[in-house]
Length: 196
Image 1 (cartoon, rainbow, N blue to C red):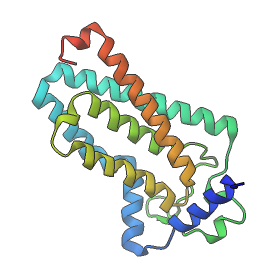
Image 2: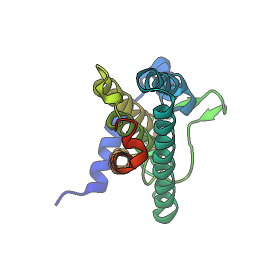
Image 3: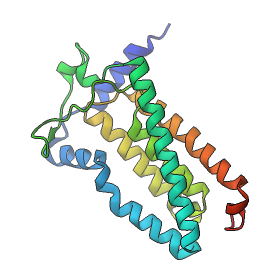
């Protein structure tokens, strides 16, 4: 029988490595929320340019709802099941490469528990809400935004703050939330007038 916990630990140790100062900084930046502000602003501009301000506002509200739902569900699981982050697990943390946080002046530790990755869930939710909401028709959207989702998710493993299974659960949760929010949008009479 396969021991899933040991499999997760093994994958964690294989995917978390010392990539040097440049990779450390890139992964730290990929994991920072404000790093992606220009991307979010570009997406808002693109929606406004293609469909007008009303659809932009609807998409913004949909993304905010999707992110809030994803984040709160992740917080519920973190507080209810309290699975320690890899950088806090005895027998694992000694073998991890931990990245220095230049803002805090310490290694990236984050909260105590990381049952489901909120970063993975929220990025997947944004990816699907925007993609299914029409932005996915833009050339290259699905490829480039999928790479963004993978980069943000992998950065959490590289930083030593989530096990691979926690990233996978985050992506699954984000897909469910993003799909649900998109499904609701398509059924609202007000959004049908905007071309959904």
